[in-house]
Length: 178
Image (tube, rainbow, N blue to C red; front, side, top):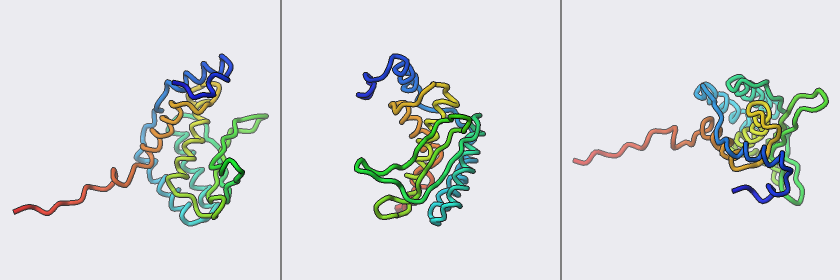
């Protein structure tokens, strides 16, 4: 079942859409070695230091790119999200053009209250924008659409790299009955 905008796409775009929809995960070996980089990123974000957050973001992207066998993706981390009537912009993927490499832009503070973005939201946004890049660089789709497959790939990466606290912590011990 395709999203409503599918019918407005050209036939070539519909083919790309269907290809994207069919892929629900990406091969990512060595995820355990990437989790400390995610922790470093969340610590940098919590510090409120933009340049530290950008450096940690670039480090994670470089490692992810290496694990996935694609060229590193450039990134910029800016302070406060832009907002309009439709809402706040969380992240932006810019494809390569005129000799400029692909790039993602992320914002580390909310538009209205200027609060630091929740770590999992920031990481999810980063992986979402990385997903657009992977549609071109890894999957060779020739386009990137928000398909169910795209969102499943995003969630797949989030679960691998940012497991819930419940999954990381052992279950609470129960007193023994006598």
